[in-house]
Length: 611
Image (cartoon, rainbow, N blue to C red):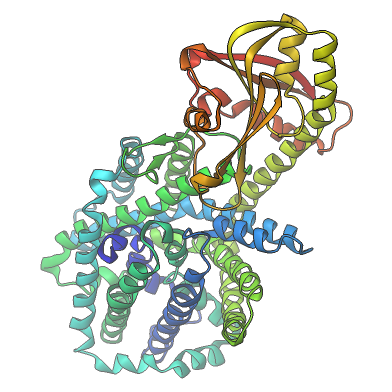
């Protein structure tokens, strides 16, 4: 499991040596001198220890939501725990913002990792003037095209390839450390502090570069549900961290001897005979790292849809064996367009490094107060120690965020604007759905009034079963009322079905269904699903047979309401937000397709609704 985790969890952070150390010396204040190299390496080493080893591996991995990790899973857990707290809304806002920043990061990571790997061609054959940008664009296009076919067969080799990659990183580093063993003085934390004391504000640019060495750390937490805590911890402590430290220190040792190699220290530390195979291995590692981020975006998208933060999107399962292997076409093509635009717009990995980091540091900073909130709900000495330690680490998060804010003019504004735009859209969808739901509930007929109408004017009974999807299990769905109003009929068996997404990853089978009789021939089913699960209406109906609700596929008709939204004179939403919500609602996947209902058994009843 630890070897398998190498290919999924550590692909992003494992490819940071391609570009991170060079980014630390991009500022005008930091020359490539031995003292500065020691200071930068000291900051890198202790960042890996404090941010990844202590914060994520030691503390945050314990903040799991029924075994699942990630900012949305953490947010759902905190909201569940803080149900009576006035800070509940604040935590929800932080979680949405964290997810939005993660989406913004999803386009930059493939761009910078693939481009930095392909740039090795300029080192291997400088006279050939190989066109790096077109090759990088082709590689990325191929990566996004194969997403629809699934990655199950390729994923089997991810772990062994990354194991080979980390082995090469370690060997390359050791080969230079033995030449310049003085580089090990960088293990002294005072070297990094001395760099800050000397350059003060100017050292923030260095810290922004140092942060690139810990990007991808959030994947440790987000992918916890695939592998569990123990394999991720074992892989980090035994393989990944030693290989990364050795390679960074090897690059530093090489720079002590050859300061002019700062242009591309990773490839220039390799022997000339090994450059071509190293480029091939680096490209494979960058694709694996990119694949991990793309898959993460797909997973977070489905979670956001389930939690009501995004409109319904088409989700395809690319594996019959693994439910987690999914493909979201809309997000795939949006990511591809964004990644290609970034490569064309910035032109090099060094330029992209200026844009990279701000969104990630924001997302990683948000995880800390959410985890602190969770730990506060526990008691005992261990909880106090964790809270104190995590509060101190929060200072480091803030320092990294402040350092990355210095890159706003160098492109850092781009992921920040993208993340805030996604946040605004998610908030728009959430508030828009709440407005629509409030309007529907105001116009919904109470069950008692409906039963009185049935007794007073009983409609004609027709054979078969009618399933009416009901967003809230409180009244009578509009589709049922309109069917009786216009057709003057009601089926001999009527099922009012409500699907409720809970703030936990999965729901146990025993707690999934609740069946309540409404009157003779009418029952209400409430099906609970977790935010990691996609509801399957047909499976729910088959499970309901155990509760005495028969299901005959050939004699069952699904009645759905389709609201046509119109701009009313009075609205709960500001004009721009209302316009955006209406556009998102039009682009949402048809509910029958989202739930996988048989097209020949679906009747849609349209309703005009002013918002």
